[in-house]
Length: 145
Image 1 (tube, rainbow, N blue to C red):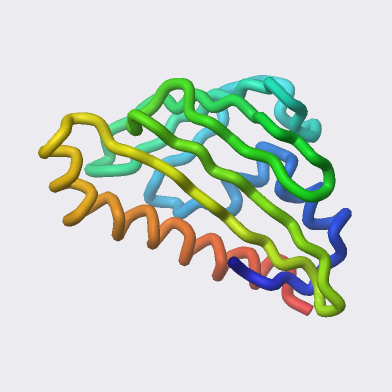
Image 2: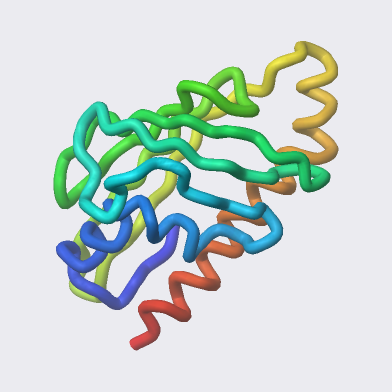
């Protein structure tokens, strides 16, 4: 979670625009939005296709569906196709007297049984953590008071 010195509506406008995801994703992930019409705010059941290079520069297609949109408070993106056997990322925006507390809740599971658990322990957990660490740094720079 990160406290941003902005109003709730500003947070919603930024995070509900899919093209902004590329701005806060580490450059080495080679993140590209493939879908068209993503310069407008998200809505329930909206599908967004991406290309990412999460590990070893190998390109993967990632297809998500937006669910549970409760503007300007929360939404969830759910992976329909991609590197995980399960991925659900809930974005929550809580107004405070000091700005907006942005909370990310990610529930994911890797495929491949034992191999997936090994990859999680030694590679994926650190990589997912680094992605969110990078986002926090970039968001604080974008929304610097």
